[in-house]
Length: 327
Image (cartoon, rainbow, N blue to C red; front, top):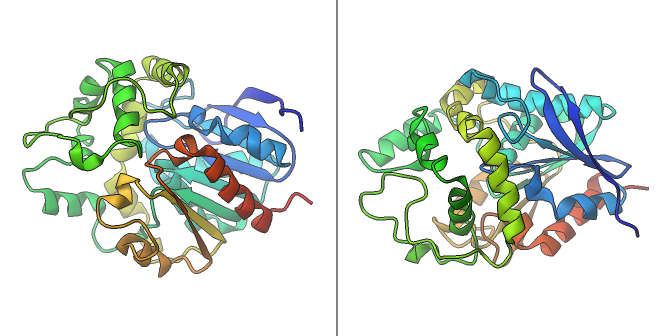
């Protein structure tokens, strides 16, 4: 099969104009990236899904690359982020669609399934399991558990602090972040220091992980040289606000067919136990996601769709064939 034509266009699905990569024709599939990434993180999935008969739509989310970056922090709350995806579904035919999200994109995808299941054939999420709104916000829990210690999410809360660190050398920032999350590093040997005060400190290896080329790194770095990191960090600065906004969905189930995928070396899960169906976060998730399938990508870290693209694509295409067949 020939490679599908990939096009770039500008769309205003909500109150911000986004740059959109599209390819293929057929049932609608939207890919939602995380932090600190762009639509480029889906470079291995776009042609594979389009060639399989899907209309693939991949935004640079608000605050990233050349998409609009509103000034107000509250313009990055969960209603704005899910509103962008709902608007894209309307723009590209009204749905239903299958939405696939990684990292922060997974959190947006989970929330969209809470708010607008009518727009969805199903969802696939990567790395971040479902965490339904509960009695205490994540920010308050981290403050209670961390004390005077360092946690990157708390570090991200104060505008300007993380920007100063991350924007000092965007190329090295991206190189280090992509290394730290890779399954090719033993996170237990990564000395972050007892007095850690920043996000990208530690003895990160030289060079690049084996799944990343210099061209890939340059593509990411150029995007963040252009946009800075404030937009992406503002997503984190709405975590407590999101908890307040989503109180009506406290302990709500996810009712649409769902695939959850993770690398077996993804630090989001691997830092608190073996990554399998018995992991406490996945056991908790299962209580609220009755129509759930799990896919574990052996040896992959946090960037599974880039580290192990063939395995990731196979799992996604199997799920799409079930919930949104092309014929």
